[in-house]
Length: 272
Image (tube, rainbow, N blue to C red):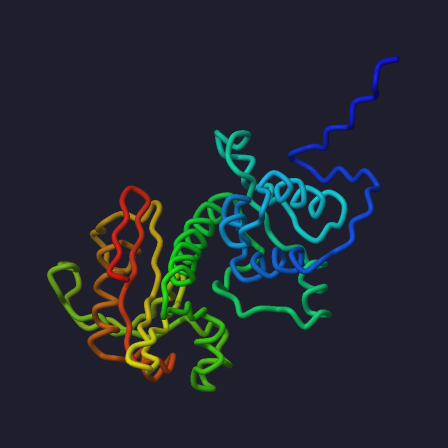
């Protein structure tokens, strides 16, 4: 008699089979990483969790998606032309976050990205996460270093910043400069970095810190004729003004700041 072939679950939508899944410590670790970074691919989760068997780990991600509803595969990734061949990207569901909260296992977030992201914003969000995850993974494999996530920074920020609608929004005053030839007088505005992080260094038995504002650019033009329109040149000028004025000290309560700029066509890091 021919043997019955197991039902192949859909890659694109949740397809439960009724399989019973008992959650363990590694599952909570997976949920924690997704809460911390918002979006992570299966390959990134493998790099973070370091399972003994990558094949079984991929299968476990499938169980968590199809059977438990604790993690999701964001639909925006299916619009990529090579979606069928790329590692799947995962996110935490509200149920997954609730479970972590009940277990008192919510880690500090590395990004403040919200769940309300469209297709274009999804690609930008993934770019942000990729940059932050790469830095965190680097610190975890470097002796004497620790990644300082944005939640930890904001927890120690001044009260006015913590209570602000967007604690990452920082006021800045731009002055006429070569980067903005059409700016003729002082202009008061604000900047909101895509990410904010630090690295704790252990040197001679003492803890020292460096901090970076992350900006990820996919489609922003290098320059614009109107300084009120977003451009890479305007952002550079804004961060130059912020760093020169040291306003980040009063706003975020951090002792130093550098710009970490990532562009889609090339990577430029004024960072570690």
